[in-house]
Length: 160
Image (cartoon, rainbow, N blue to C red; front, side):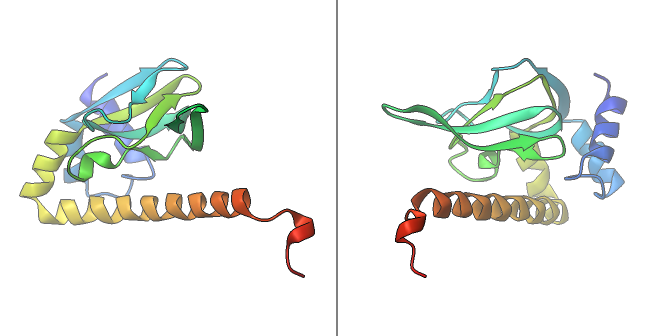
């Protein structure tokens, strides 16, 4: 894919659509558009967190492996969402798996180069980390609600 196509994807994606144009152009230099066939792993728990994924089209399952139970889906990310933030936090290792459920296209940013650009431009770093924290907080809230539902007492045992 050409830099122009990547730049247009960055202009359209909700995570970066209102980002300063110069920053989008900088990010386009360290990005690629990648399409994943169903069941392809975008990231694997424990491996180096070397990319940041902006989902353009498709669905990605965020999963964790539980011994004796296998992979459990925690959340699903769709077009306009992001996948992966472990690239931003040492030791830069994935905490979960992410798997394409259908054909999925993403803008894939090189994490090492992204961190380098953020270390050189504090305003860019603040902008990206602020957006990232908003996503993380939303996902944490969704996980909390899932856990409340999972561990809630049966209806007949709930207090009136």
